[in-house]
Image (cartoon, rainbow, N blue to C red):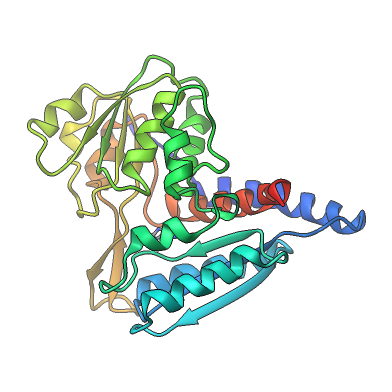
Length: 290
Ligand code: GUN
């Protein structure tokens, strides 16, 4: 058996096209267009690449873009003052502060400063709290988990009753993904570095989301035949044969996994493009909260 490849890039293109059409319609009707402010602090090369990609997509869809770059040494007060200013700016509907921040900054305090109505990343504690409440809805669903759910539903629209393993418990991926799986009536198990018998939990799971940031952590042999596997890992592996001197690999032992899974997402071209598409979708939605 060879798994169906879940083409995140293609899925993201379709979603982005729908957003562009909606923006074009708004322009034709002289309705307000959303604006997205990106905030990058420091010189982390991966963060720079991600933010550049988000800005490029924003422009391609006709969304207004404001970009802020702050020094690595930027004090907490300066960053929070900028966010307060963006909270008040009527031309800004979405605020994205790229994570991780330099280690001297408090990520938690920064996230608390963003207005929940402009939290297009869906990671403000207010929105994270609403996500975990049964009869509530957050103002925004978080981008990577939303992309993951869309990818799973592209091959299996109804996941009710399925068992799911989520490997990783980060605030922006693992934890909210588990919440969203539960909202789709699947039964998630949140696994982490102290989890005993990770292999056994995976072997019993109909869905596995690998988001640990550890190359090849999920072994092909651990995958239940026919399972849906979503690889969230983006790991840079030194490789002199590549023009950039590295190659990207996920958290899944792909060559073995593809022989057992029913469907699997690749790295690159899987979750990454979907995260950006969902950010654009949230930015369009943010117009409703003006
Ligand atoms: N760093 C890695 N992924 C993300 C994301 O989805 N949002 C933000 N703000 N930072 C990130």
